Length: 313
Image 1 (cartoon, helix red, strand yellow):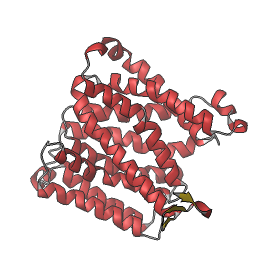
Image 2 (cartoon, helix red, strand yellow):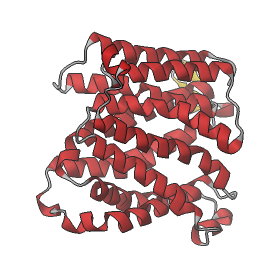
Image 3 (cartoon, helix red, strand yellow):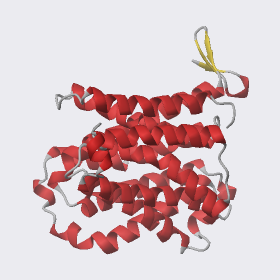
């Protein structure tokens, strides 16, 4: 493998341009996020959600700090040690803490497939909050494709049951996670609104610190009451995965992609999540979803394909 000018990569006779690299990175990003739901479903019954999330950030904070120090030029490191307006970070970090706690609370009762479908509503909600907070306007194709994907997600969440949709018979876990996804969707445009020109990694590190501080305040009792010596191995695997790959790895892939493809297209790759989770659960022996549910996942993929193919963004 060798690098070409303007960001091209060469794999033997094949040359991969920056755009393709960005799309490949986001495809991998969505896959790694989906593993979080797969592992989280198995870990959630054994540990308090706030304790799990707090320990996840105890691992993630030094990882992000190392990234911020080594990958930020020395001349730009001052905000790493002397952040401005530090009040911003508990707000941003608190929203992310809410998202992750709600995720693991939801996974105690909801399936990983349905929670994976709920997260596909995030790009559409992010676009709405982006307009309300930043007056960012998404084009017709963007909103149309995200709305189509949202319809597919709703179909999966209600298990392809039209009567459940008409009576709004949504599960408690899915509703709880929906509140968490709202928090995450609000966080996304706030990042741009509250950024004061800090390098991206430095900003992400202090946001993680804000999340960690919030989790220590609200999750302290759960941390102290957890019997850490007798947790099953799946909990430790989940914590290690979330604190490293799902934090630093996914963050790197997202930033890599955002330098190569538009943000709307990058964020839309979250729409792959339910399809990935369906495949993981099926091969893990948990059973395959019905054809009606698969149809909903297919609709989300169609929405993603329309957005990717669109020259509008």
